[in-house]
Each structure stands twice: as structure tokens, then as C-alpha cells.
Image (tube, rainbow, N blue to C red; front, top):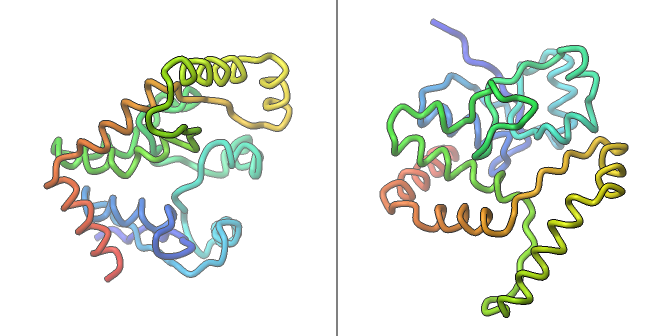
Length: 195
């Protein structure tokens, strides 16, 4: 019998706890979450000390900024990535929802991955004039492609991978149209996490 993989976590509701537990519930993964670390940096230290074997919920951008030696020296190995598209630097690393066996399992795992794809969106009020929306989207897209902006981001080791407005609206529409039975399973899985 395989021993569970010990995963450090900060606490209930955090990605560090939700992702391993939802994978346990939906695909039968064998993670044991060790919760109670005050910060994700404390979880990282616990990994380095050998108290836990991994963590979830860290993004590539943070790793590049905070722990570039982990990537450079191969100190960490990735099991999966969360989101709706694979990171360009990790094209062979499976997405979490790809572990689902049934289409409903995949849909549920995509539901838990969608907020990563949405990121930190800029929004306007309902009923915004279409020409104003187009102008704001155009300005945002131009900023994301601006050479000086990209140079500054590269110097700070910040990944710039914006989601354009129409694509963002499609993702949100997909989340909102999640079938009620899948939402009920997701809700139950979250309730089960707290037991």
C-alpha cells in the first residue's frame, strides 16, 4: 500500500488545501494535507526541512520570483498545473482537470481551475457603452504588448500572460453554465473537505 504524499497547507479554503483534497475526492489521489502553517512561506520552509513533501497552489510566476533556485536546480518537480491552458514553459505538464476520468469529473475540476484562468480581471459596470468597452480593451491590450512594460516585467521576473476580454467572458459564461449536478458535486466535495 502506498503511503500518502504529505502536502503542507495554510488552512481551510486555501488553494494549498483545496487542490490536493479535491484531487483525492474526484480522482482518488493519495494526498494527506498537513494544515496549520501560518503562511505559504512557512509551507515552503517545511518542504525544505522535509516535514512535508509538497504543496499546492503556488503559481509559476511566484516561483520564478521567490524561488528561482528551485527551478534552476531542479529542487521541485511538478505533478500538475491548474488552469484551463498549459503554461508555455511547461507544455507537457498535465492540467489538473485532465486527470478526471469521466466528463463530469473533468468539468468539476475545470470549475476549480477557472479562477486561475480568470486571474485578476479588470471589470466595468453592466451596460457599459460598447465603444467605451472596446476602447478600454484596446488600451489594455496595447499596454500588455508595450515594449517598455514587458522589459520592466522581465527585469522583475514577472510573467505577463493576459487574457483578452472576449476570452475572459467566455470562461465566465462557461463557469456560470456549469450544470447543477456538477455544482452540487463540487459543493459536496468542499463540505467533505471540512470533515
